[in-house]
Amino acid sequence: MLIQSFIRLCRAGLDARLSQASLAGELLERADACAGRDPRCAAELRGAALAYLGVVR
Image (cartoon, rainbow, N blue to C red; front, side):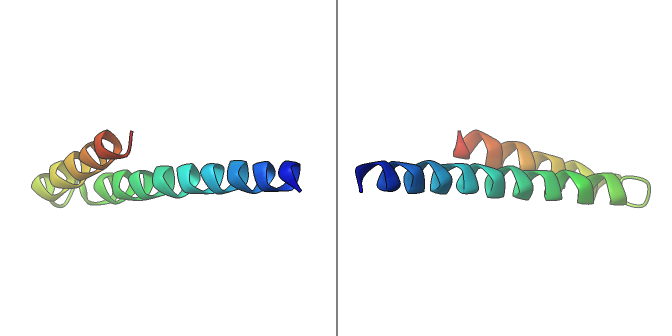
């Protein structure tokens, strides 16, 4: 029982980290996609990704 609870906690932590990384990654991908069309928007998206990572860590 204790081992199963520990494994669930580890999985939950890993899932949370992956979703956090995927959100920052999504913001960076969107920034790259719009960089040629709208550099200001790209810079804002990159800033948002960095701010998010700073808060999460």
